[in-house]
Amino acid sequence: MKMKKHLVLLLTIAVLSINAYSQNTFEKGYFINNNDQKTECLIKNNDWKSNPSDFEYKLSENSETIIVDIESAKEFGIYTFSKYVRSTIKLDKSSENINDLSTEKEPAFVEEVHFLKVLVEGKSNLYHYLDSNLQRFFYNKENATIEPLVYKKYLPTPYRIEENNQFKKQLWIDLKCPTIGVNSVENLRYQKNSLINFFVEYNNCNNSEVVKYERKEKKDLFHLTLNAHLNSSSLSVYNSTFTRNKTTEFGPEMSLGFGVEAEYIFPFNNNKWSVFIEPTYQYFNSENSTDDYYFPEKKIVSTVAYSSIEVPIGIRHYFFLKNRSKLFVNAAYVFDFNFKSTLELYKLDSYYNSLIVSSLNNMAFGVGYKFKDKYRIETRYETSRTIIGSYIQWISSYSTFSLLFGYSLF
Image (cartoon, rainbow, N blue to C red; front, side, top):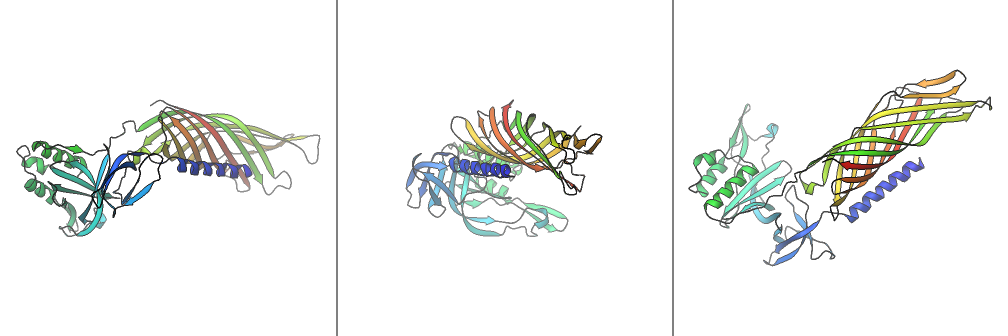
């Protein structure tokens, strides 16, 4: 029990240490304050999925970090990556959830101040607002007031959904150009890529310099990794109805395991989050021998031969370092499917208890290091699981501490 507490404490300290040491990277950028003063600096790249209300910067790698809120900055950006401008906007918060659709066609605007993400910059600019499932687009022309592009789903009758596509009319009237026909506008969708393509076309048509602030998508979002496990496992079996030998301890025993991990990297937040699944073969063979209470010259022998396919399904968080290396922590729920497993307790002469092995599921927590997205090492602790779950009077506790060595095929 003490060993488990020490391992959990070790993992906790490691996670806190990693978090303190490794955060999102600071990249070259700038911000403009309310007095129109531009400050060149390093801005923490959070790869914001939703529009931020503040940002962090420092003047050099070794200087202190300063937080700037939306009230203090008119604009900020990370060069070649993203740009945000503060604006007082008319925001329609009408739900697009089918069960919560409004019956009104017209948007219900509220006035709010936000950092809008710039998607396209030129003679006419396209802006993006995203908060959870609420997505809205805005635009302006030649630095005029930023206006909402109006789109709304509504429910005029209980059984008919319609769309207010006023944004198409807005663009047709305000952004005319010989190369843009009515069909181009009619086929527009209220989606980021569709609108980006339209604004790029409009700016090109007007011979305007165009800047697209699009995050470069990471192409290799899927990884397949071969893992070798060096396991240290223990098993404790207990029966309260016994008058003696209530508990039998097995291990710790060293063994090998082999797994194949499939991992998907989420394409946001700087690719720091992923989900994974790793079918893994593991085994545990051990023997316990004790003197018989009544006949000391005889030995009571207990044996276990436990094999299974573990299938951890979990989530992983990366902390990027320099030189193409990164640290990570992960947590997983482990499904266990045992096969050809035996547990025989208290063998004495011809008498023994043969128990059916029926394992249950448990949790796993790991801390690791990855280099060049190819090589990795990880320490992983699995919480205790029962392997004889079909009995009421028997209690078992099987736990494993592993050292993993991995090589990614792609």
